[in-house]
Length: 327
Image 1 (cartoon, rainbow, N blue to C red):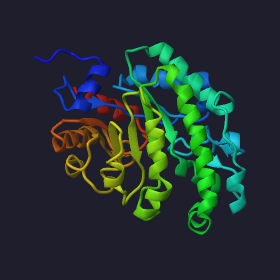
Image 2 (image 1 turned 180 degrees about the horizontal axis):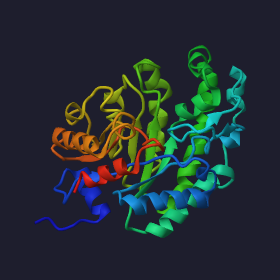
Image 3 (image 1 turned 120 degrees about the vertical axis):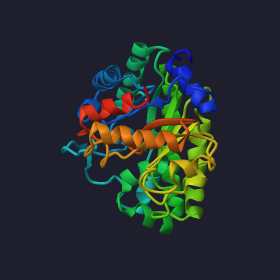
Image 4 (image 1 turned 90 degrees about the vertical axis):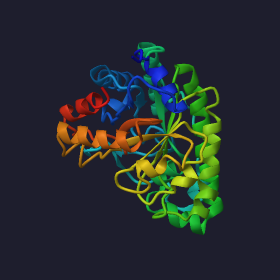
């Protein structure tokens, strides 16, 4: 009989491909309005964890937390994913990229998010690993520039690179400030490694070096999860990153979980569809999909989760079913 593991032991064994007492599992969601202050974000995040007892906590701030300092504005309008709507874009011309200045991570919304991590770390101690969401430089650039990002990237590459360098410097400062909170690592959100948006050569030029620089800055942390967003993704390119876990919309875009096992050195996270299963499904369909995912991976080097954020409209019985599926 396998002894019950702690959450950290279970995750470390999962990453190593060793035997686990049960498969690891985690879901995460946005916390609209709560995500604008550190204490409220921590309270909402901890209540979710106390209810469902997942193997790690993903701290999910609003995507504007890293951009408000540049002048980006957002409003909460009731989106089912829990995300905010963007105001006028900060980047209105190619010249605006070079006007961005590195931000202080301890002030404004980044300071609130750091406070949330400190409060979560103080509450869970060594018992529950927690990781902080980092939107990669291109994802942040898209939110600053909107539709014009890709045309600027192709027509004014040096201007965009200057902006990306500033964004990266701000991220590195934030990670440095994050480490003392006790965070186990980062959740790196990669949104442009998709053939629908960029060529592989473009991603290697504008995305990959900065992603790797950010991952290198997490030295001393042990649990980095890389989220590959969208469809028609550059799985092999990102699957070669020095991370511990990769997560993508595996039920909606290649590769499948079974195919991915031999294509990356990272453990896999996913198996559940965020809308079809988590929102519109039932506990029975959740458990059936979880069972199929565990069979596809033989339950090895695998964390059961959704391919992307769990919508805030997901029924609680479906969330509970995910946790029950690994027992």
